[in-house]
Image (cartoon, rainbow, N blue to C red; front, side, top):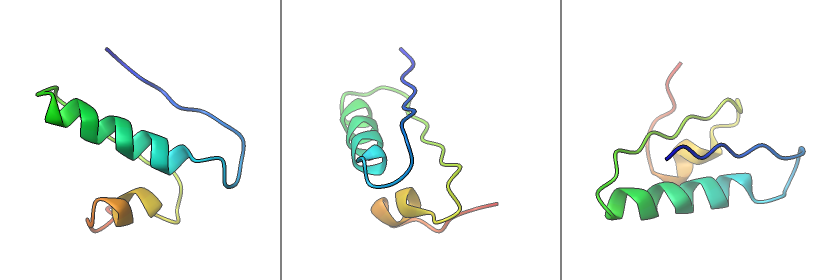
Length: 53
């Protein structure tokens, strides 16, 4: 299964939804990859990881 989230700019919950779905998939044993193209790096903060790139 592939899930792609695309929404408008600013405060609509993209990071929250993407991180929640990624955690759920990983907990269920699915191979999970989460990519972020936002330079703020909020997704990396959520997972307590250093942004790369």
